[in-house]
Amino acid sequence: MLCDENLALKILQEGNTVILPTDTVYGLAADGTSDLAVAKIYKEKGRPSFNPLIMHIHDLESVKNNITVCEVSYKLMETFWFQKSAPLSIVVPVLENHNFSKLALAGLDTVAIRRPNHPIFLKILQGFGKALAAPSANVSNTISSTTADMANLGFSNQIPVVDGGPAKVGIESTIVRVVENNIVILRYGAVTAEDLQFFGKVIDGTKQHLLAPGMLKRHYAPKSKLLLNVTEKQQHNNMLLLGFGKILDADLNLSPSADLLEAASHLFEFLDRLDKKSPKVIGVSPIPMHGLGIAINDRLQRAASQE
Ligand code: TXA
Ligand code: MG
Image (cartoon, rainbow, N blue to C red; front, side):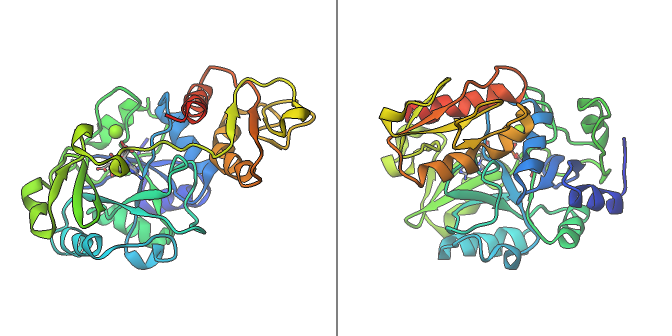
């Protein structure tokens, strides 16, 4: 179903999702500071895992208390966002007290940010005043939508779409991260290595063997040992229990009513809160393997295996 900019803004302010046009592909957008709004994105995309999402911003001012930007990253933003209006996402470290959704960052201490070069998206961002998380608007394992029609059909007309015409670029933004003044390309897009080379040495980060250990893709892992499918808290183990459903002795509960959307929204925030108490072990209740439970279990398994 189509909707206009004003309704889209209202939907976003109410914590719901809406499909917006960008310069690259259509994006499934939600409040980037709300875990619950972001959980809706993952649910609607039907992804079996929580990939970190790109935060879309209008200007640096709106996120200046959330990130640190090195000189090279700043130059890239100035050039590709504000001079060339080119599709470049830049991964930067977040500050300790950032207000981004931890679910959107998949628990990482960095965030990918970009300025979408589309007048409708930019206007909505200005009205919203906060970052919008927006992965490509397609269900998992289908191609990205470059028109409002494609986005509409892809989600069987369930999610409101703002029609901003066909996307100009047609493929997702280039993603880079600056590491010790080198520009590491994490995803190829319309901004190329040739475009980037004037700002630093360019390294292909899509081929993991070319990277130094510190540059490798990392997954969120708590410092405490994680034990999954725990049905009873073990006192002798100095265990804190992350519950799900009707668990009486949980230290925190992902969702007392066993609602997977609620559980997904709390996952990284609650793991982090328990981890900060430095228990020997964090036990986690069994999470059912359907719907969002598949992505929750995927993340828990990765965190438990510390790979
Ligand atoms: O053109 C685009 O970038 C589109 C439009 C809608 O803006 N968005 C997009 O988002 O492609 P998505 O969620 O489909 O892709 C996000 C990619 C993920 O594959 C993830 O690996 C990477 O960005 N990413 C996000 N945050 C990251 C981080 N902190 N470090 C490394 N990679 C990150
Ligand atoms: Mg995608």
